[in-house]
Each structure stands twice: as C-alpha cells, then as structure tokens.
Amino acid sequence: MLKIMKNSSVNPGNDLMPVIFVGHGSPMNAIEGNEFTRGWQQMSARVPRPRAVLCISAHWETSGTLITAMDNPETIHDFGGFPEELYKVQYPALGQPEFAEDLIRRLANHDLATDMDWGLDHGCWSVIRHFYPDADVPVLQLSLDYRKQPSEHYALGKELAFLRREGILIVGSGNIVHNLRMVDWRNVTGGYDWAEEASAKIQSLIREENHKALIDFGQLGKEIDLAVPTPEHYLPLLYVLALSDKKDSLTVYNDKCTMGSLSMTSFFFGD
Image 1 (cartoon, rainbow, N blue to C red):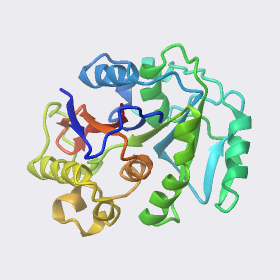
Image 2: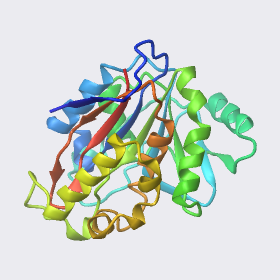
Image 3: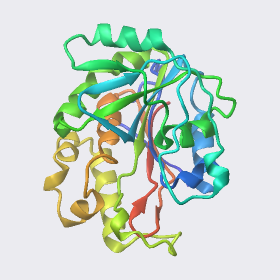
C-alpha cells in the first residue's frame, strides 16, 4: 500500500528527477516476484527515463568516497548461503566513465576518486533490475566513506543535488531497520515491537522534515539503537533526505517490517 504525503509547498511544475530510498532486504528479492518487487516496479513507472542511475548502496564501504568508472561493471554476488539460481543472475548494465570523471571534476573540493574494481553489488542490482529489467540504463555506484560522520554524508548528498536537474536518478539502497543479529527467519510477515516503533519514528521525522534529528540518529532512543546497530544501511537514507526538495511530494511504499528486525519501508521524493 502506498501512502502519499504532500509537503507544505509543492510545485506541480517540478522539473527534478525523483530521488528514491529503497529498503532492499534479502538478495532473494532479485529473483522473486513479491509485494516488495511490485512496489519497486510501481515506483519505476513514475520515473522519467534517466540518463543514468547513481546508486548509494549499504554494501560498499570504503576509505574515501569512490565512484565506479568502468565501461562494464561486474555483477557482484556479495552474499552467501542462497540458492544457486541467484548466483547465476547477471545484470549487464553499462557504466558511464565520462559521467564519473565529470562528477569528480565538479566536486573537486571533496575526496572523490574513481574505482575500477568494485562493480554493482546486490544492494544495487537486486533492486535496479526491477526498475530496468533490460539493463538498458547506465548504472554507477557511489561508495560510503566509513570515515565520515553522518552529517558529512548528508552534506555530500546536498552537493549532489544538481544531478537531479541533469537527468540522473539517484537511489539510496539500505534499510531503516536492519539488525541481522535479531532476525527471525521464520517470521516473514512482521516486525518486533521495537522495529515497528523505530520505523514509525523515522517516518514521522521525515514527514516533519526534521533532518537534524535524523542525522543525529544516535540520540533518538533505544528502539533506534536496535534498528541501527551499525550505520551502513541507514546512511543511504541521509543522502536521499539531503537531495529532497520542497517541490517534491513524498510517497512511502513497501511500508512493512519483515523477519522481525528488518524494515522494507521505502521513500520516493518527486512528482
């Protein structure tokens, strides 16, 4: 079910490319047809055809911020213990080295560098293949610098805002509740009370546009501490919030917890 919430000042003439946060969940979503993959497909229908996709995935942490710059990024199967069918999946989207080089030039005051080794991890391709199943849109990844504070990730997101006016679809991929130590593999339909409370609290702060509180998530209480035991799945949300604009309407989709301690809740900012 989609919940559409208008910001206080919505401009119907919005010329910005949408920006999207995706709760990506299990790698099996890459090959399954379920309510979450249908939600991604529904969102993709609302996106004008982009020049390229820039994905910020929880699964690529580096020292310094890197951007993939190869012509043919590898499909990375960065997980274990899943059916063989999943490891056979390839997502042969092209890269766009000239875009990567241009972005580095335009953000010369930031610690950005090209990367020729990583490719597309499952936080990226398991989702994007539902947006563009023919792999006919170039895809690049931007890494998470583990040395940066949350406020610095948010600030870098602000610096990327011009890309929305240039036909680039920016996708943050993580989970706002992600505690693998507490996953209940038998519970595929709901979340623990604290997980539901954490998801609701984060959504409320997003609706209030209280980005400062969301940046300082470590101060939000015990349920958020449980929801975000490590920051990598949460940080892509900060990029998306930084990129959101007063012209955007907000759609909350895939709004469900699963396996006790994972939230698939996702956010679409745009028309």
